[in-house]
Length: 137
Image (cartoon, rainbow, N blue to C red):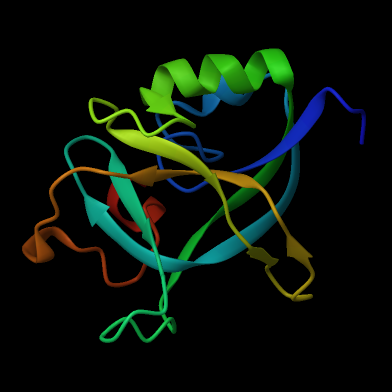
């Protein structure tokens, strides 16, 4: 991987076949994958909350998506689209953080960037399957 490339995990409207998949043009899809966490229906898009190992967070729930290889320029565009920050910006809906993603089938692991939801959660809007494509598709 070039030094100006990064891995990202997409789990919602950026996934192949989803409404904003066109934004991934120019990137390279690496693999179907999953991360430990919970998925919520926020609006026309989902929000991921990574498992943190706290009490009540068993860590046995998965969010399904894809790992992509993108350029630094594309990563910046995706941050803008997501309204995300790698800083502790209280106004950002999402923050971009590293997570461990597991490749579907093989179990090989990656350390991609992922956009984690920072807003209010409604357990009534949780997506138990962890798969946005079951909602959007």
